[in-house]
Length: 291
Length: 154
Image (cartoon, rainbow over all chains, first blue to last red; front, top):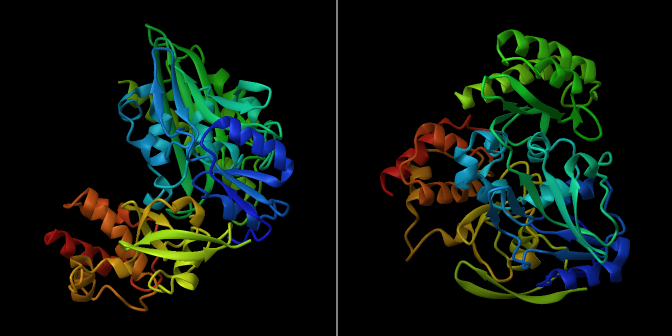
């Protein structure tokens, strides 16, 4: 980690102080918490003008609040805290998050944060893809107040997002779905400590008669500059029982929406082939969870 | 611009001059003179630099030193107590779980958290517990055996 341009490291204790620092330093400030992806950003040459690091770990945002209509996860909640949250462990509709938390090694679970995973806006990460399937919102705070940004509108390309220059992420909010909902996530990786070759998250809402009323299908990990949604796969699922036949059709349909990248991890062709396989597995896993 | 900070390393307070961008790894090795913690990839990919912060294993190369000023840091130098090797260290010797040795300190620190949280892990739990640490020599078998041996005395 050679961020030698950094002159100051702040650990403010409330969000007002954070915003004042953001106003003061403008584009030369970077919000940090676990710092897990700092190196990743530095090595890609994305932090050359950074002079101030603003550590938000003292804001008391490392908590998970659960109400009847939403789960609010504070920005500095560690991935390990999320993994151990009883609702995440037990509820079928949060299955995609439970699955995503199975992959990182201990050291990342102990330092990586929910807010960092989102605001890094790295398309190769796992948690954001699971959160997209669950229709999560990003909570941001800035000098003009706080606002919720649907995660789908938050990502704006490779390492880019729609945050204003004096805004920072304070947490994420996941609406509790009505009725019978289930979700799942699967990642393909080269080893236990690598970014995804491709990953898939699905969320299915089923009616009382077992018909799929709503489907959300997202893929990440080298499929594009941001995670992508697959409306074709979703249409192939809605109205079906998500049985073997429907899963097969969704697997074919997802190919219409995939135009992945080729890089050192995998070729575009391989990613497409695996996107189909992983989607089918994730759908089967989500349905299994419901029964 | 250098700042003086106090760091609690292995239950001893060290006063150190650090840059605001320094990693915990660089601080431990180059400023506190404790070179048991190894620098491998320096980017969170290999686990050689694993230390405990408040008892939890983290990559010290990715940890900003300024963010752990009020935390307790444990390095491999802090594993022995009262002059006796920790059972984990003894088990790595007894099982012959070391070849070149470069990954060993990091793996022992990951093991420390694993056995503290789960004193009787299954083989699968052991392999998962050290999945953030790479060893390019041993093929992991002897390391897993060492952790099983250490678990027997935990």
